[in-house]
Length: 248
Image (cartoon, rainbow, N blue to C red; front, side, top):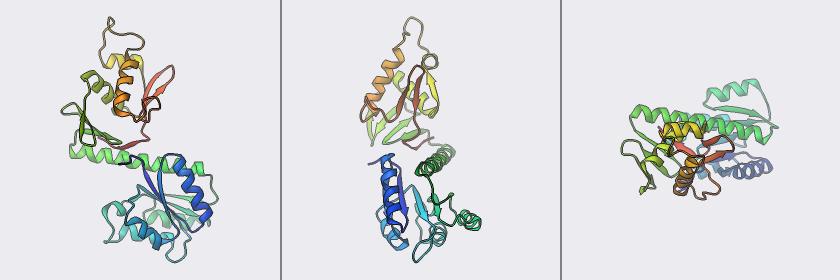
């Protein structure tokens, strides 16, 4: 199971399509592509994207029609009907931008554009979608946090990986829980010591570092190059939101 966000690029300009696919893959996304609406429909039969990058001017069915069909057709699956869309257009027409947003597109980017700007918008939309999932799960009463292939159950103090329980001490669990609940924020070592209520006789400069190292060995594919818990040199630690799937 991949914990990468999936993106589908639909554009009839092969050079741009290939460039975007390479660029997004380099930045950690799983990417597929199509040159028009017909090919897009075939791709969607076996690939469920988290976000669609859709060119406005396509041969056959245009981008606005595709966006409208995906979001409003009764035949669309629930995942497709809620699929976030970024529309690309060489026209830069304000009317097209407004219509695109009205049919359910989440953003609009005029060509030519810097791929870094597209990447920033992709990340912003996916971050918002994940936050909305968190709110929905909170409302449903699910007392757990999910990241990548891991689930932290806050009711029974357990950590599982693809359904298999991972052994974790209560201190490690509290530290992981606090980092998750404050994901995206840097937590200083002193703050984490206070949270864990580590007394002066037990606390030392690397006491948090040692606990973090143990947690990383349990949740990171490569503890020397962590994806989830990042070190902010001279300050503390940050649980990154880049690889968050959904959470409470």
